[in-house]
Amino acid sequence: MLPGVAPLPILFPAVGAVPAQQQEAQRPRIVSGEATLEADSITYDPVTGTTVLNGNVLATYGPTRLTCATATLNSETKEAHFRTGIVVTDPVGTLEARELWVDFDKPGSARAVGITLQAHEAYFEGEELLIEPNEWRLRNAWATTCRSEAGKPEYRVLLTDIVFKPGDAILAKKSGFEVLGMRVDVPFFRVGLDQSQTGLQTPTPTINSGFEPGYRWRNVFDVGPSAAFLYEQEAGTRDVPTVNAQLAFTTRKRSPTERERMIVVRNYDRERFSEGFVNNVMVSTPQAEEAAVGRGEMIFFVGHTSNQGVQARLPETNRFDRDWYGGVEVAGRVAGLIANGQARYGHIQDRNSGVETRRAEGFVTFLTDLVPVSRNLYGRGRFDIGAYWGGGKDYGWLRPEMSLIYEPRPETRFTAAYVNASSWGSPFTDADRLVAPHAIHLRLDLDFPATDLSILAKYDIERSVWYDFEVALGQVAHCIRPFIAYRKFPGTLAFGATLRADKLFDALKQREVRR
Image 1 (cartoon, rainbow, N blue to C red):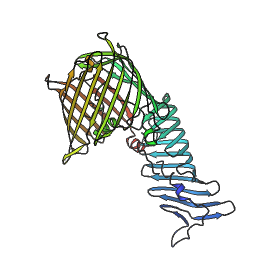
Image 2: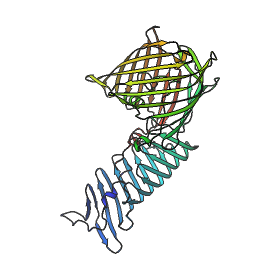
Image 3: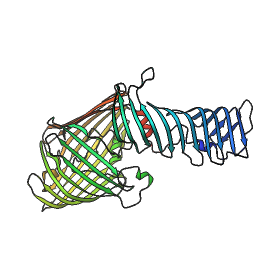
Image 4: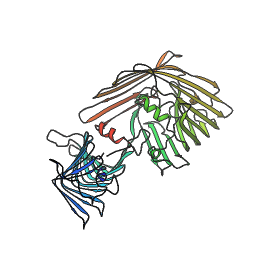
């Protein structure tokens, strides 16, 4: 999508050709493979190389359908010009335009003016729409996902210049949000359409385990096709902020598919196993865990961390600094397993004791595919290894995790996991330790049309205590979806609201757009 624009070049590989002869009860038409173009009359001028279609013009290509009053095809300029009453429809939505130009020498390129677009829940009105392969630009437009019965928007997103990159991101400049006659200007925003991506984001409000308000702010910026810069910061109202700044890069040319992913390495300091489905309620599916662990790329990185806090023994928090560090991360498949490995070296100082040293660290994760056990029941294994060398103290741990996932219905999922970790050596800082080496994790996910609820509980077998409870709730309320997510450990409460455009975003997340 956008509806019906990309296939039009297929319709006109040889514009100067004489149209197929009219068959019984059929109008004049041009046929090329799956594409058909017909009208009440079709005339061709060999001097100008122009074909003119007049009256009830209809173009079809698979499920895509275009209608208008008149069209001109020029074999010299390789351009098709559609005019008057243009309507393009396909399963994703309906586009109406005053005029539409298609460059059929460049498949996937087009320009439309005076447009309205209904794409799933979203409605757009705009001055100009520019279409290039895998990129669509809309100028001087507004959008909404909520209109009254009379068609009046209940809010508007004002868009001076917005770019859609399917499978990648949505970027907008000089935008605004208008509701109840009030307007808030937004100079720039970016919405990632790939799970591994972010961009310039606004800080997320949080509440820590002591119910103190705070914030978390995370940004990832592309630095050319093979590098990215990460800046993240978080703090409570009375805390010294925790800051992590990191430059990550590859040393080889990335393929177009790889360039769709931002280059971000896993952060073992902030929270271990945070990409695990049975470890973090914010990881929505087992497939999301697979995508986070096995990104399939070698990444080098350098960075700096200050005042990093890790809860290794509840409720104590251990804080440390990394003046500098560097390392490499590689991911892919090893012996049929999804694998991720990271090695790094740098200077570390324990803020509690003041002791500092240089040391090497290594982390490895192996994740199995989902294994069918019986009908609607799946098993999965995960194995994490961490090792530390330096400061006169060597330390390490091995953490096996076995899960059973039961999905009796598409909207319901039950998951149980068992963890039994072991360790060796002496840690340099308590932050090196695992929180609950011997534990049971239980999770419930409900995904209904208007409500999605996820609950995760963790039981520490050695201390005989439920040490973590996490819940994420989203509820559709007319045109918006308020949500709240609470995690007792590491102690955060996040809340907010999203505008309803689920189906539109699902369509935009597709990396390959046929039409």
